[in-house]
Image (cartoon, rainbow, N blue to C red; front, side, top):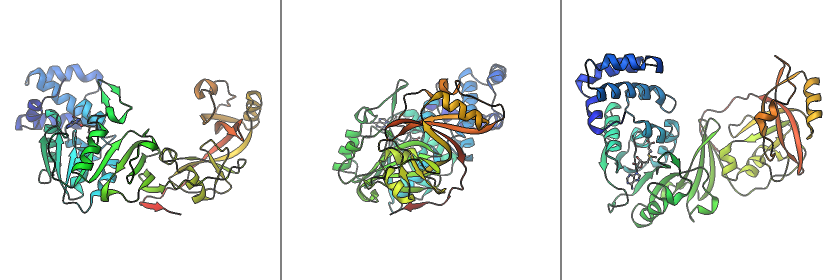
Length: 404
Ligand SMILES: C[S@@+](CC[C@H](N)C(=O)[O-])C[C@H]1O[C@@H](n2cnc3c(N)ncnc32)[C@H](O)[C@@H]1O
């Protein structure tokens, strides 16, 4: 089903509200899809029946990205795929406190516009796509934010904006293919940077996490953001939205940030604990800074694993207690796993060419044995293996900056 602005308007009509509410409470699974559609087609056109069912099912799917508001919102499959996770959108929106109005340059279904409006700013939500403009309007209404979100259908590169602050989340896919070059984004990064230079000094641009450090313009701040240990995005900040020029890593939901200052970590043999820095820390190039902050060291000069003798409670790294470690040798590894009565729950690797899953199948495994992780890496530039146990630590929940 292709959602159109007309169908979206109908979904918000008195005729559709009741059936849509009921379907949202109980969206049909695949097996029940056909009978549900057949039943609905007795009262509605095939397109309307399909729009009802698809919206209910997308609302269910959207729960992964949005809070309870998802059950009132409207989505198309593509706009939901492209939407920022709500928690990340709310975090980035916080930088705009102090601006009366912000333009969302390419708003999609409006996740970022909504997060901005929730902070109290007025948002001009711009998209060249007629369905996106209709979706943001519908979602603003559904969440009682119409007074603060004004939709506008336009190409963001055209108007001569007279506005101080903007957010942009350019599209990263065309025809289901992922875009890797910033100037192939929709709109391209170069067009957004041109707007920033000419007329919108205070700009935030969401980009792919693979943003190379050399692409950070002078004076800008690049922030890599992870959510629950998964790297989500890099953001380039300009103007007064810059907290400090340079690179920073932020781990959500804790909201803890770490600045990259080019610190080099000491290199030593593994200690009692192994730490895997959050991917935002690694991408921001702040591994040495994290080591310094927490009193850790690298186990190899080129590998982003850290080690230490104390257990640190930090949202910026995951910890394993190292049970033992040895130069890499499969036979010896299996002997040691047997001696530990271990069950390997995961094989992790960094700096090793071995494929973890096929490798795991070659490992000794005692049914209901002690759960361990095997880590394949390098120590002093030699292939190395560690057997570890996951340490569960309490994570801080409030936002704070880890500074040296
Ligand atoms: C990644 S999506 C935005 C998603 C949105 N931030 C969210 O979280 O829901 C990018 C949007 O930019 C729009 N877009 C791309 N190029 C544009 C242009 N030149 N002018 C206006 N909108 C554009 C697309 O139609 C798409 O809706």
